[in-house]
Image 1 (spheres, rainbow, N blue to C red):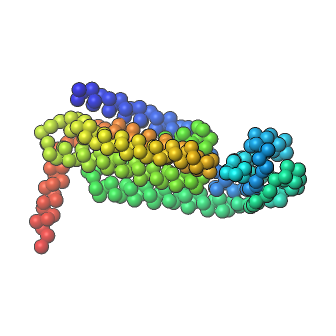
Image 2 (cartoon, rainbow, N blue to C red):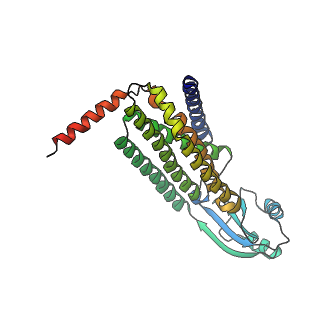
Image 3 (tube, rainbow, N blue to C red):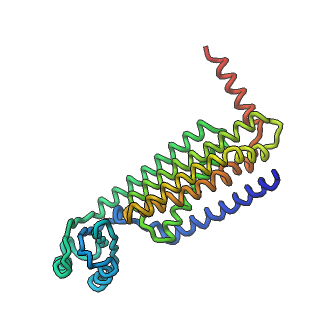
Length: 299
């Protein structure tokens, strides 16, 4: 049974590495689809009569606008129309005519400039960078380097696969999606810490036992907690996905994918990479000896 679990972990690790390469390839070829928060553009919010459906409004706009646009539905027959900066003017003539002909109520009309979008991109990348560096520093201080490297690789895996799903399904990368990515970083770290702590505990307690068996035991001991946490989190995310409406769908989809791949990576990456890198009980024996020496040296 132990050998079967070990082979299963190694197979899952190989699949994860293949998926990571494919995700990187997809992102490099297609690029991340930036949303209006980052690209800038014209945003018109209006309320339509109950007789008009979103499909009818979409069909009308296709005849009026030659370029790309996005029409999203909100509650109480409210809609939002987004046009990229190259499409139209801040107060186009067609808009007044279209609103009047269809008895629409224009609630708001605004423009987000390209400079503001560039600043949001820079700030978003800085947030991701600092969050990742803080996580890596924490892992280096907390774990033996093999477990720290495994947790970092799992983190990269989770974010890359989540971004690849956004790219494949053309889900715009907005500020809410960025917030979901930051949440995934924290969730992935939590899962990796649970597994890493259990591996360290068992390897220290049973130095004569093989590392492969210790890792399998650690996974079995923490699996119920991992699954319960993941299922309850996914239930909340599905509720947001189905009930919160279109404005939060990108956020919910990003979190949903991130939690799934995070649960996968905590088993097949965080627990398997240290084994591949030669983790052994001697690593912790040396750490314990160094800790004792430091405590004795203190006055």
